[in-house]
Length: 373
Image (cartoon, rainbow, N blue to C red; front, side, top):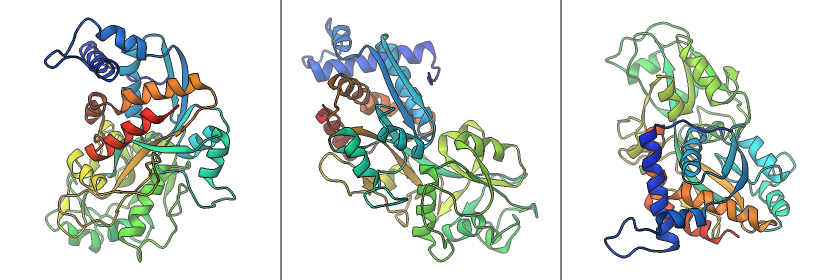
């Protein structure tokens, strides 16, 4: 079972938060009463007993581990197993009915690719529409390890040329132009990329394609098509970068933080913007819904020039059946995701390197979860 450890104090705080959230939804307390004798009973009524199995995005691993820990602290008879096998693997397992929901850093494809249409395959597997529910906002860092370089500014054009093998040393004139006050070494650039099918790869290449189409000639997708050396999963590229002077990679903010990697500020035309929960949230808040009804697939503007917006972000979706063939499974998925989407759990994710869902998105997600049956 993949479960993150939290301190006793943190666990108690999250347990209390989950109790209040469940109580409010099932049995609203009178104004001014935030506890009440019915709080624990209401949580137990909302908790499920038994197993829930999911698989997919490694980008959301630390976030979903936090959510699982909070839920299982409050609901001791629930066993939630999430395997961070990658977005592509998670979707395949969901379609094959091997897991109850999937985590993916990109929504189900609605057009044919590699001989299948993911949304249709998922619908056939569910026997009902499959929904993409955005749950985790995961900024993607351009993380690097260059001795003596603590601050770095990149733009999409230069980043594309680095990851496509056209810029090969750290003192290249294009990098120096963006970093005039930084002493850049002649160290060779070592690019690391995700070797497994990854929604992180897809979102990063969408950024490069949208913001620097001439410098990035490749198609977007879960499979890497640029240059460099492949490492498996987010942990693999982060660890490799940490151990190699001159290394650079694209990886989720949480993994960059865990491995104490330096992260580039991104200049989209309005000045360098450092990666923060606030700057990433500005980009997600402008995303357009492209799914219909409770299918909340979003289109992110990776080429945004909004001041203060960090443009390289991904949204991890929990892919669910709108109506489960087994009603008990539907109740389990609904119960856990209600907790995951709660303001309390979303707020706790900032400590793990994620940004909470913007309010306008969170409201739609909660309504969609309520509609799962």
